[in-house]
Length: 441
Picture 1 (spheres, rainbow, N blue to C red):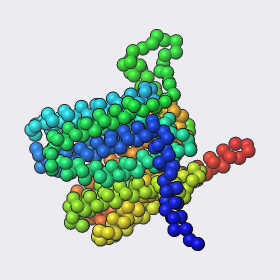
Picture 2 (cartoon, rainbow, N blue to C red):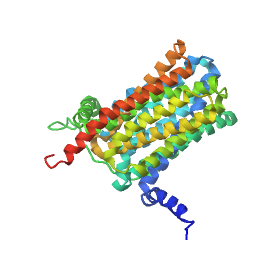
Picture 3 (spheres, one colour):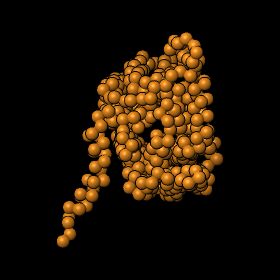
Picture 4 (cartoon, rainbow, N blue to C red):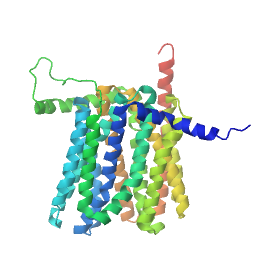
């Protein structure tokens, strides 16, 4: 007799670890809720910022400058952020970051004419500097509030949450900007960060205490003296830590390797919607929804089929290659449903790369170096993303390539990057594992 309830039972069993983690561990639950609210704030106010720039200027350069300011601010502040995350209490830093971002959004209300637009860019840069602290601090804190056996599930929940928020946040923000205006969105966005800070305040986040590196034999220095005297030394120590621990360096460069081409491909989706699909914001919304859905389901699939952490470096290379292959199809078609499906598949592979690399970094890094490790990873990711977008925009601006030709070229580049990863990095990982498991090792 066939049990018709078996598929439903298997479905619930697949999601049981996620429910148990959220239910049993209140500090993780509060950190997760704070992340969801904070991520919503990141995307909810973005279209309002674009609308603010467009209100006082019709310059395409000034609109694009928003993206450049965001990416470069993240990149340049990441090394300092890593030092702060490892040196000071991460929970307190995240609360301060949420409060600072709320204040910066309220100060956006001061921009009432074109001559004051510089304030919007300065505040955006300030927000991104705070995000450069918040995001790695959150990721570095997950192992401190999560049992080792739930670590993969915790990161899948985190990534899936980002995907859902990304898919819905911009859409809701767009409608809100139209209905309640730019100023109303900024106020609501500021409130969202304050709610996030409240949940982090209620969480208990243990952390290994670390003393300043220059206090031995010296009088205790002030807060600012400590920062000035130790920041350069600690950044160098973080770089040396990655250099001397290749098993950590390998997953640390996975996201950066992928985004060298994937960042430009995501940017070109905006142009695809207008010039190829001719659907404007509707087409862009669908393609970005495909991106968000794919990023959410990819890690879940990877968790089911690749439970051995020894395979994950190989999975990263395969994911990069698969993302490029899927975008190759996107560059060769002008049919919406095909683009939707293959963008979804491309970012499912990208999501698997994201979670496997994150978990390996959490497992392999010492707690008092984890902030610098994730900040370095974030630095490589944002620099790769910025470079990818800048090169793509210049090539299109100078009309050296047609849009679909450039998508195809970037997709091939992504495939080559994945194959090189499999031929080199995956091989180094295999040799390290063999040496580690051998009796002499």
